[in-house]
Structure formats: structure tokens, C-alpha cells
Image (tube, rainbow, N blue to C red; front, side):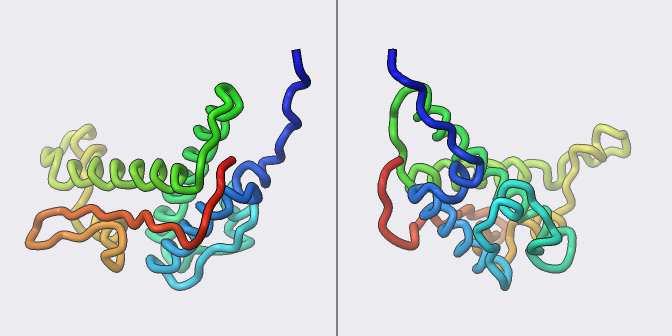
Length: 168
């Protein structure tokens, strides 16, 4: 029996690992297309969501969108990192991006199914319903993640990495 692998800090797992850092740069650039200022690569911003260090912009919509994106990113990194720890299977920045983008697309489509749903006045109907304007504000921002061409939803979360990548 060999020695267990050394412990990684959360900063390393989510931001400093070279493979993850390349994927984080993808998300930074994606955010730069959605809003004006990309987030700094720091654990308080990415892991904790500390608004005192960086804010995604004014308004609740941008904060909620950034929270959704960063948590999907962290979830993808965590899933791939724990898989590597248990199976030895390495992963790439492209795998992090693909997993994150696929989950974002899933969220966009699930929310789309809620637009116009639950038209009654019951508590359940109100809980399920998502107003079209709220959907547009969140997911159709600048047409980066999705758009509605002629009323038909087109989901297109960009997946292009900003540079070369390795494996982790």
C-alpha cells in the first residue's frame, strides 16, 4: 500500500491547478461577454462568492447569473477531481468546460420549460412559473448563452478555450 496523495487546498483544486486555471479563464472570458468586468481568479470570489471582493455588476440578475455560473463550474471541477482521486482518470480543461457548459445548457432549457407554466393562482403554480421577462434577463443577456430567434429558443453556450491546455 502506497502513501495517500497529498492534500490539495481548495484554492488549488478550484483555481490554481493549471488545467482548472485554463477552464477558469474560459469562464472569465465568458463572463466578460455577459457583463463588463471579468472576475479576478481568487478563492473568495470563485469559491465563496464574496461580494466585498468583487461584484459582477449592479442588480440581482447579474449576481444570480454569476452565482449560477461559478457554482456549475465548481461542481464540474469537483466531480472531475474526485473522479481522478478515486479512479486515477485525468481530466482536461476542455472536460471542465464541456461539463460546465452542458449543465448551463440544461439549466437554460429547464428554465425555458417553466416560462408560461403554472398559469393558475395556487402556491404550486406560482412556485413553478417563471416570467418571460425574468427568463430573458437571466439567460438571454447579450445573446451570449442563448437567444430566441422568432420565438424559438436557441441555446449556444460557447465552449472555446482561450489557450492551450494540459491534463490533471
